[in-house]
Image 1: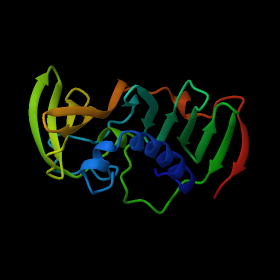
Image 2: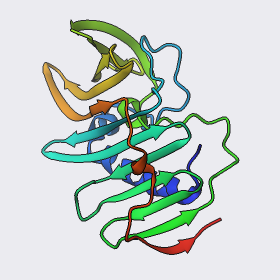
Image 3: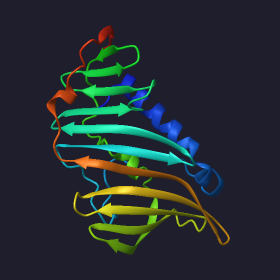
Image 4: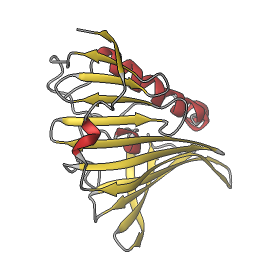
Length: 218
């Protein structure tokens, strides 16, 4: 199941605003643009394939700022809630169709599901592993089921990424992005997977009561 054009814009704009808030590391030290993961690459020393079903929360921190995405998946049904419990709470719900939910106004836009992207792999957890140009990985620590890796981006000596992989759930659960200047190492931003659960309430994939439909896309 894949995002239609309206939902891709909806989704990408939110993620882009997060990445740009913490991308000084990549602007100052890298020439390549930030990209998001597609098909998991074999050179990763860990799995990036999502379980099914599952639900979790993605927390992205830049300095003192924190933003959240709640995600859920069950078979072909998916849901992504952006800025939950805030005035900006909005969501993408994919079931028989694709629905864009705006909670403050209690309205929903309906769109047909995309059918021309069957070869793409779009994991809901893409923001937890959103850079794919890693040159090397080194295991540096183990704490219970969590394995910590240090990774270099494009062989850069001016940046470092710490990746924390939880063997118990089979997913990366945190990334920390650092800028390195001489002996100084500065955290630019982090992405974390929290409150992971393997059970999903089917009610999450229903349009909430009281919502008004305001438009229909194709």
